[in-house]
Length: 146
Image (cartoon, rainbow, N blue to C red):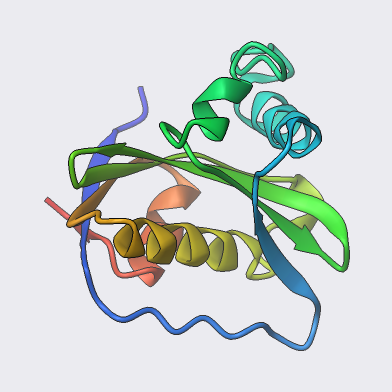
């Protein structure tokens, strides 16, 4: 059984700069964007099973309950994540990167942008559950094991 590790992130200054390759991060702001986000999440995290329904769960992102983000690598959707906020205590959720774009800085850029916006929107602490390769990513972002 895989060990699940909880990590936390205390607010600090994040300075993400785009690299020479084009990695852009977009907050989901339309049903079309949410479908792209849901497809990435469902394919990578759930083996294609539609845990996040592109239509039925869009209201979570649209209402701000679960803002979602997509990272593009040279214009191609390459990763997705979301933030769940509960009165200033947030969690980074559904972090998924398409296999071809792993280890290229895409997830790091994506998570940095999502975390930075969460703090701008009132989050005081951000949690993430991690196992496997995700632990390395979150540690590079400044999360600490507790």
